[in-house]
Amino acid sequence: MSGTETYKRIYAVVKKVPRGQVATYGQIAAIAGLPRRARQVGYALHALPAQSKLPWHRVINARGEISPRTWSENHLLQRFLLEDEGVEFDASGRVSLARFGWRLPFRCSP
DNA sequence: TTTATGGCTGTCA
DNA sequence: ATGACAGCCATAA
Image (cartoon, rainbow, N blue to C red; front, top):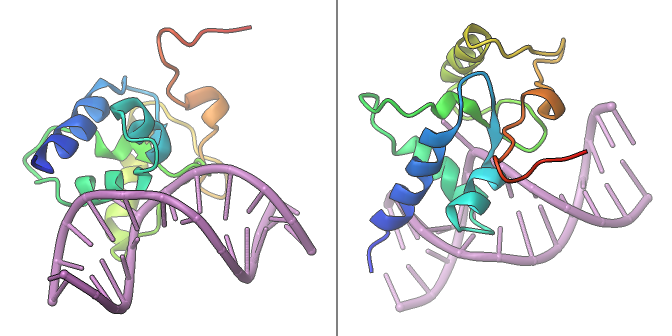
């Protein structure tokens, strides 16, 4: 088996994230079929080449905020890209997952 | 091979 | 509301 499949899974899900919406690492992992691999999603994105068109900026942590990685410069770009897509940020730099959080098509409700 | 770490999450104080 | 602790598992050395 190759771990490449895992990456492809994650990438496929990230690609499915619609514009103007954001998803959490756990969400991506769960949808990709990796229940406890939220962290690996972060690794996959870290290993993601800049030439990829993956909307990695739409992937944030469960708190609805951007993960403060070692390089804070990218995190600024991430916020900028999200704002450009119509996502609103809180004064603390957080996004309302209740409004911009990615909702699955079959998961409808009340 | 083992060890250490981490772009996380969820619960408890 | 924020802060600290433990659990999970792939990647890197």
